[in-house]
Amino acid sequence: MTPSSTESISQRLSFGKIKGREVIANFNGGRISSDRGIVLIAELDKKLRITARFAECFQDNRHLSYVDYSVHNLLAQRVYGLILGHEDVKSIFSQIKGKYKK
Image 1 (cartoon, helix red, strand yellow):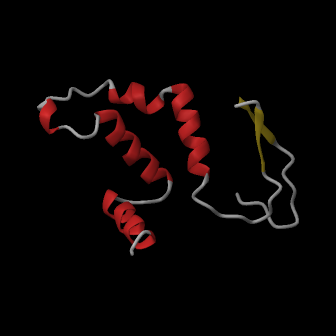
Image 2: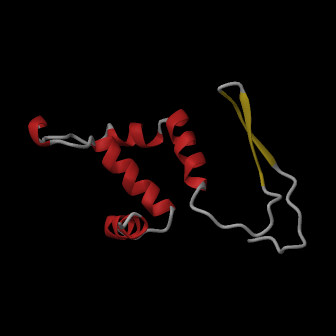
């Protein structure tokens, strides 16, 4: 359930220190929406190795000379895309192309 604009969430999450600076997340920003939350998801994934451990379940029979991205990279991209609400990889690339058109 999304809190109304008058409700306050006092929960605070501490992610420790990165390069000497404490990283804290709180939910006092009101009604804000952004894809930037994926940065926190990726950091959590990196620490817990969720997608890395899942990728180990797959056997990669591709010839190394043709491989640009590891199974882990491809799987992480798919999982993060789903978290962000993208149904498929095409929607991710079409959004990126629109942002970086010259």
